[in-house]
Structure formats: structure tokens, C-alpha cells
Image (cartoon, rainbow, N blue to C red; front, side, top):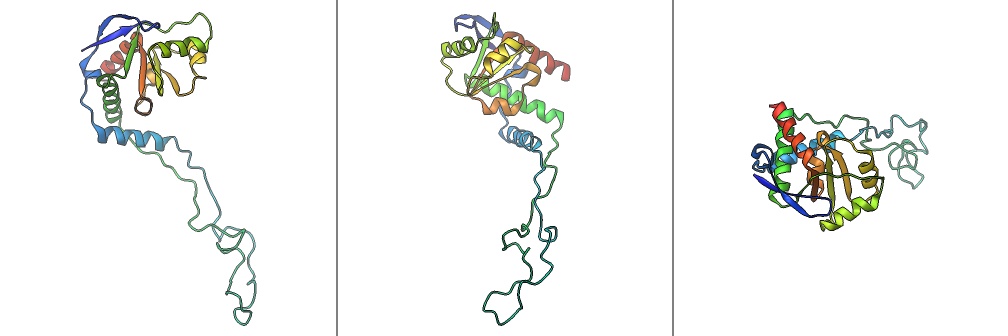
Length: 209
């Protein structure tokens, strides 16, 4: 498979050949959905906690006698219907994590990458290089490509200048090749990636086999 390659000015430089086993995989919707749900679940802290009626302090005495007052019968001022009372089915700390094996995660990532390529939302640039930290430079590059939607920028290695320049742009997520994941690929419409990052992803996939 061949993909067009551009420079930061959106000028076409030619084409690069990519591995069909990485960027030409048939999309598996259920698998991608399962991995995305698991990834989102694994981000949950699961630390929320409130008190049930048995854990709230006080309420040992019956508020008023059972009959003859004209009011509804009450057994404790710490019952759920009272202000300051316990919570019905109170949330407690729990582990939301879901186990996804490496093979599933890898295949889902390849499906997401391939979907970006087949959908025309995969932009390969020769390099993203900045002389100084300048948000306008990254914003200008995206503007030249006509990118106005949520975008994932992928570099081969961490570049402090590029990272600091891109992080303030609304709707832009930046990561390195070894940090590419299914959620980021599916949550962002466009993927702008350097040629070096493409090669690194192919290398990582080959080494994982």
C-alpha cells in the first residue's frame, strides 16, 4: 500500500510504502468497541464512596411515637428520606478495570489505524520540526491541511517543542508512536503522523509478532 507524503506546508512530496499488515487490516467493530470500553473503564479511579444508613452517625432514638401524632411513622432520623440520612445503595470503592490481552489490544489498534487510512483521515508528513516553541506554527500546519476537527498528532519520539506548541490547541492531542492507542485513534477524526512514527509503529508490530 502507498500513502501520500507531505511537508508541513501541505505540499505533496511523493508517496511512501507502508505495511499492509499494519495499515490495511480489515475493520473489526466489536473488537475495537470492546477495547475502547476496557480502556475507558481502566481510567476510572473507582474511589467514590458515600455512607449507608448503618454508617451515618446518630439516629438511635425514634423521632416520635408510632401512633397518635398525625405524622408518618419514623424509626430514625438517619433513614434515607431524611436530610443527613444514609444513601440507598451507596456507591463504594470498587475496581472497574477490565482485562484485555495483548493480542486483542494490538489487533484493535491495527484496525483503528487502518480505518484512518481507508477513510482518508491519515496524513503523513516528512517531519514536524520547530525552531522554537510556537503554537501558531502547529496551528498553521493544520490550517494548511484544512484540518478543523479533532486531531491526533503522532511523532516518533517525544519532542518538547512540538508538544508544548500543540498542547494548547483545542481539539488536538499529541502522542509518541509507542503511545498510540485505540481510544485516541477513534476519538479523533484526523491523524497527522510523521514518516518516522509510521516506521516505528511498523517496527513495533513486527517485534511483537
